[in-house]
Image 1 (cartoon, rainbow, N blue to C red):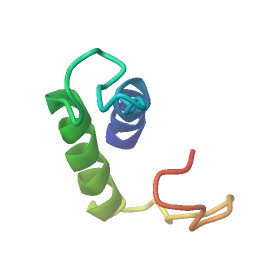
Image 2: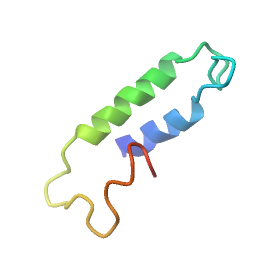
Image 3: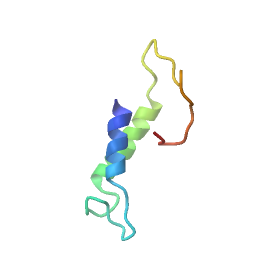
Image 4: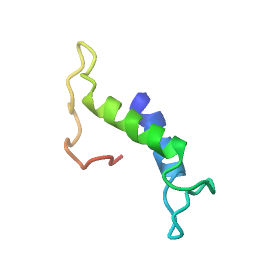
Length: 66
């Protein structure tokens, strides 16, 4: 759940060519930084008990791939 929300926030706050974010703040905006921290936290967090990571799907698809 955390990864999905962080990924959506990350997608909404991408840098433009003029060094501003899509939200029109200077990039990296606070929301982009928060999204990066949340993605790192979600990536490093261990899977809940009873759930096998990567079971039934390809694993290691890239850093923030969907």
